[in-house]
Amino acid sequence: MDSLGSLNAFVQAAEARSFTLAGRKLGVSSSAIGKAVARLEERLGVRLFHRSTRTMTLTPEGSCFLERCRRIFSELEAAEQELAQTQGAPRGKLRVSMPLAGMLMMPALSAFMRAYPQIELELDFTDRLVDVIDEGFDAVVRAGDVSDSRLMTRTLGTFRLKLLGSPGYFARRGTPRKPEDLESHACLHHRFATNGKLERWPLRRGRKDFELPTTAVANTIEPLISMAEQGLGIACLPDFAIRRQLEEGTLVTVLDAHLQHSGTFRMLWPSSRYLSPKLKVFVDFMAQNLFPA
Image (cartoon, rainbow, N blue to C red; front, side, top):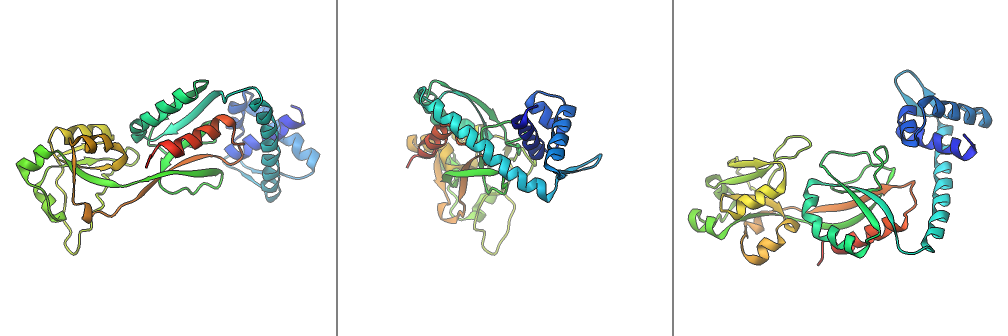
């Protein structure tokens, strides 16, 4: 490998904490990565990694050198992208991981595809915790807080959970006026695919605690929307997923004053990666169109 190739081998190995994974990403053997790192250490006169049969961690010198290398590659990618921008519209493949609820974001995604036909979207829908860098994603969309210092983030918008049912259901079973009234209703629950737990309804319960009945459980949102529309019970759903149903009157909300919830969707991408034109337009477009006012 040349000098730039050795630096890239080091960066990939440092981020993956594995010669094998780094080699797989670069299309070379793990021994080639190991030799490149060894030559780099010999040239620099310092150890970059603490290595054992089970683990591989950066030395203090290695951590410092990694940040410098990231800046070098960021500047190189920036220069390449500046030249690419002179060639026309953003183009190329964009690998994005979306939550399962992202299926309900398809109107915004479809609008992006129409606006930027030369960008090829590769979408992976899952609720598992993906490793953006190791799995080669350009970006991920997730709800919740971010604790990975390797990632940059931009807020796409906020959402709230709502309790909903069909007008027909409430005509038959009555409309709950306080949280305790839910004990006598059919409740449709969402189960997290990642840990198998039921999503807690964000009710202000006061002094009295109670168990919500379980009439049906699903690990994706779409079946719950359908069951609620068919009058089979009350579901707790994010507001962005049921805008059309609320506008058309097929679903109505209850107990709004007794709910306490606010969630945030964010776009995340590797901090070592220059914000390429295709990624920049995707981030900007989704921030403007995913949760329209």
